Length: 256
Length: 331
Image 1 (cartoon, one colour):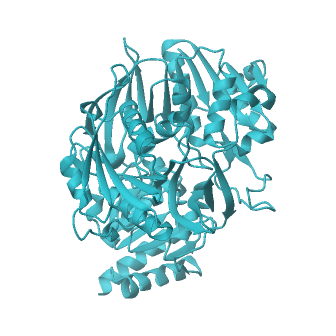
Image 2 (cartoon, chains in turn cyan, red; image 1 turned 180 degrees about the horizontal axis):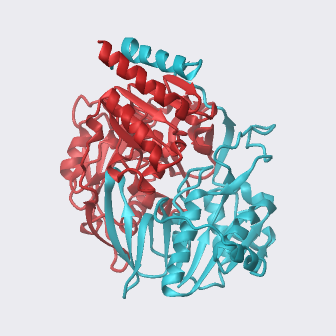
Image 3 (tube, one colour; image 1 turned 45 degrees about the horizontal axis):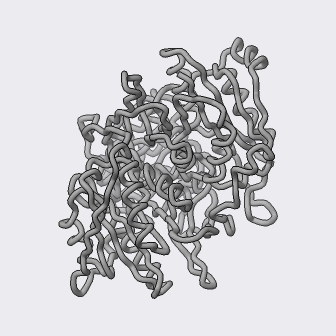
């Protein structure tokens, strides 16, 4: 199976974020990591390759620093990478990102395309579904299991409140992968070494420029959310905090 | 003619998803601000009974968008049916709840129409005649006001709990219901869905618990959950967790709180080592009182906490267990 995994680099989970001067985006001087659902998508692609053979290709769009996500993926076992490298890719909406990806892979023949179900920075949960529509492929979202069948694949969709659903689909298809579908592997030292020789194809903005257009939506402003809740901070030594909390539980919340 | 806002409600197997009332409330609020007309649509194989339920709310009209091929749900059928309907109807704004099903098809629908979706919104603003939709970014650390740069129809999905379903205004008399018949050609639907099922035999119904003690990644190791279990027992509450804890198998799936697990609104929600990712918050933000313990003072959970303890839960939980036991023994 030839699988493409779309991956995104996002600010680290506990990185302190600050708005930039125009308050249109965050300041870039933070630590980054791979978007966690994308890491699960990569892991799933590697397991499928181990089971059925084939090739895993990873793709990302972003500035030079986002190459780190590809290097880590190659170290874990991906075969090659595609990097749409330009600062301008950061500002594209999901529609344009999907169009850029579709343009970059137009000469490839993938059986499956995975994305994480959503990103930790935007949280839109759209790019994979948009990509499927652009390619004219079937898709399914929030996937917790994938099995090969005679007619294509059988996937397990996660629904709300603990419900699930199996869906039979033909190939090629796009799947958005849910966190927790598997357990993430670590890159081995051998893997890291081998990654240095694996190809990373650079795709400049100019190559996909004709495919993308103006964004269809605009972030007018980014700001620290106004707190509506009044939060009381409980401070002191752990023993003092414990006593204060019990006091609240008993006298204010009346649960003791 | 004023512009139209169209709320597309959600149903499964003949039952309306209650979150749809929240979207109606949102639609009514936007209609009041903009002066636009509010209408609603129900999509499915045979949905006139559901349409009658929706028509009892204050909306100008309800449409039934029907085809036998719309049952069971598939993204191909829903996108095709709504594209047909919306191309004729041409609403200005299309509102849906940000459910797993809507996420599965609305980006496809919008793309097929050359349009865009602003998803998982928590509110809206009307400034200088322009509609802005507010959504959380970076797991709640920032908020963004987003506008449309495209032609109508504009697609917006609202987060669970962003509006109150019980505030959806009822109609003085039922709205008219108009039937819309949809043609879906052979070969359009490519997915074959099976029956929906529940995996874990649900041993505990967390929605009934008055006190919930919940753990997140801050608990670090499985063996540390024992300590939190003791706290839950001391308080007479139930143990729960954020998704990563259940994914790791440290607690069973029926203890999960969040968009994929249970949604709860207990008297007290005690969040230990939980950062407050949106997917978790959505499942517990309705709690009457929230106490959060986290060593990161910037953790988004503190945005919604009534009481905040910025500190190490391993230092705080043991004396807390003792104090709770003392208080219970004393009284």
